Structures are given as structure tokens and as C-alpha cells.
Amino acid sequence: MSALLEVRHASRRFAGLVAVNDVSFTLAPGEILGLIGPNGAGKTTLISLISGTLAASEGEVLFQGERINRLPAYQRARLGIGRTFQIMRPFPGLSVLDNVAIGALFGHAAQRASLAQAREQARECLTFVGMGAHAAQRADELGGPGRKRLELAKALAMQPKLLLCDEVMAGLNLVEIDEVIAIIRKLRDQGIGILVIEHVIKAIKSLSDRLLVMHHGEKIADGVPDAVLSDPAVVEAYLGKRRA
Image (tube, rainbow, N blue to C red):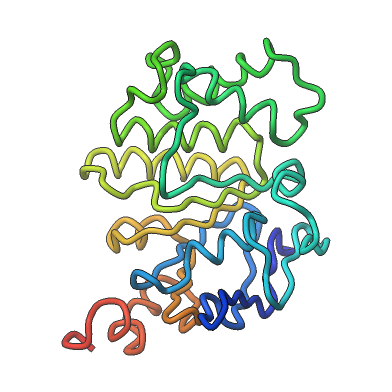
């Protein structure tokens, strides 16, 4: 199957700091790629290079075979690249429904959507992530778990072909984690390619078709979860030297 996303030798420097260094990988439609590594490994920076919120210092990002390096984030979103954010910032004063409707108006096929159509699409997305009963609530009144689901709904309202998830399970209890895993699997079954950053090893292992591991900005492993998690370099870098 041809790649939905291809990252070629991507690097990002902040003055003297190299946050991402020569990272290459591919992601197919309907594939879940788990992205793991210690804090500061460059994971969020990498998905920012893909979504366009940061520009690569070097390298290329290709989406559906087309080079998108020069496209701003909003144009990448309209091509079908959606993302969630680790720091959740709903639009204050707006309802949960209208927070999601903004995603529908902004994203893929947005030029054809009226406000009424966007709100209808938002209701469908909220129901999909288990937040339908909260549509009328102010988004800034939601607790952490609700905001996590709101982030997912906002991204889904953009009708992505590629979804970049930045720690959507962080801070959730075991039941909530299982519910989010089920949502992500349903999205995969719809043919959406998904890149997931996560620190909960048990969750990311069960969810992912492949794992990509970063350390100090570099890719140190890429493969099936069992093989990657037993790699001595990964054990030392991510799980701790005493377990290597």
C-alpha cells in the first residue's frame, strides 16, 4: 500500500538546540503508528513539522505523494491533516458544540459547509467520542477527560485522512483509556492513518500496528511493538538503564 504520509530526513533546530534530527518514516492509510520516547525526545516537535505549526529546518514532508513543506498549517488541514494538542485550550465562552463546529468550518471541505451543516457534523463527532450529552455545555467548564475527548472531536470535525494525536490518553484512568483506544480503533477501521504520541506503554502497545521510538531528537527504532519494546536501545533510553 502506498504511503499516506512520508517524512524524509526531517530536522528542526531552535538556535543551537536540535529538537528533531534526520528522522524518516512512512505511515499508510488505516495504520496506527505509536510514537514514544522520553520527555524532550522531540515527539511533539515532529508532529508539529507534519501539521505545519512548525517549519522543518531540513528534510521533506509528503502527504499523499505531494510535498507539503511550504504549505501553512491551515492548508495542510484542508488537505486532510488533523491534530490534537497536548495543551488543551478550548475556545472560552463557546459551547462544546460550537467548539467542534469551528473545526468543521475550518477543515477539509470547509468551503462547502454552512454553519448549520457544521453544527450537524459537530453533533455527529461529539456522539462518536461519547460527548453528545455535553453539546450545550460551555467548553471551558469541562474537566480534563472531557477536554481530551473534545480535542478528538474537534480534529475529527475537520474530516482528516491523517490524524495526529498528542497524548490524548494522558491523565485518564484505565476505563477512560480503554474508551479512547476503542475510538481510535474505529477511526483506523474507517481508513484514517493515525500517529499517536503516548507514554502509557501497555496502551500504546495494544493499540499500535508499529512503534516509532525517538531519543534526543533521533529515531532509534521503528517496527512491530514486541520487537521494538525488547530492543536494548529502547529499553535503556525509554524504560530505564537498569532494565536494559
